[in-house]
Length: 489
Image (cartoon, rainbow, N blue to C red):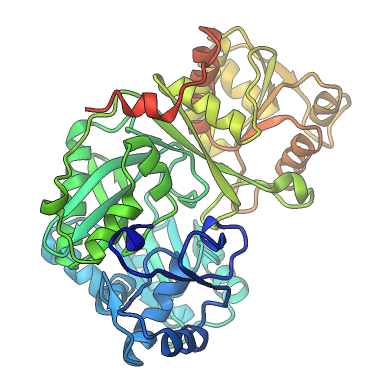
């Protein structure tokens, strides 16, 4: 639409039937073709356009940019050189060091021996992944040498100098955040910083997020804005860019930068009341940020993005979240308070939170201290708390009484019986170990089967308690997006 407004003909190449961009009246011409170099080049030769924009289609078009440019296609916006630079870990790390921006310690291994040596230098836990991933495929968090060896022999076909494995220090219990920027090559504008509700280690596409952040100190938000501006300017980004960060021990670390529109762009656009895709296109076509007169806005309400998962369609799949992306969509809840916005987002994602009843906690050992806060909140709300043996004992030692329930394979009635008989209204189950025990897996599958809302992280459990508390104060009212935008200043 922005291309048409500039008085030019717009040609769309897409083969995804689920998007608005394949409506026949969105662009002047629509090619329903696969996104491969061969197909795009044949369209380019037929249409002879002034240039091609690659940054609005996720990772796939970015991967074509270099070959298209080598075939003589003018790439508008961010250059293929910058796209490669952001993908190349070594070059990106060198730039971050020069800018003085902290990054988690990392290395690249071309053999199993090399990987073990890097692991020894960096220290566990580690985030490991093939050097080339889409949607976090093949990414895993490993906690010891044995897990690393298993990953290198099972999860990756082979480790070679041509196909190395990336190894990063995993920032355990860090708060993850991201920022989207609009840049014109010499300046950058950051409309908002998003805080992930799940801690680091959950793929950004699967994590619930909130704008504005609810627990990040203003100094860190300023740091994130400043780093985002500096990186976008240093990389000479023209158009959109998304950068992911983690905050641990009072330090902001940059995780990765993507010189393209991210899946959060529509969310940020709706919450902040500006069309980022339109502005970015105007810049790609030659305008500057100064021409557009953008200014920072203060947001007096909250927008919560929640991921939508297809697990009810796949009853045999473990619904636990991790570095691999599992979601198939996302929704947005908006309200004056964070709790209410979170509740609305859960409702829209068809994970309706109960306003009363029984919450069952079955928590992995490493998460037990973090579970104290959600347990306390649910008790204050008057919920009955049930817990499996280990969790029950842990809470009892801290003076919190709960109803004990037998684990699977123990005496009947057990936890599964309680789920089947409708005694449980909300399940908080954090997985133990990489795959979680078979028990843990069966509990989550049972929750899906009997349509019980389940939560797999303690951070989301706290957010759920806040949401229930907010809704109890009064039903959520429907408000138009425009009335929210009217409050921006």
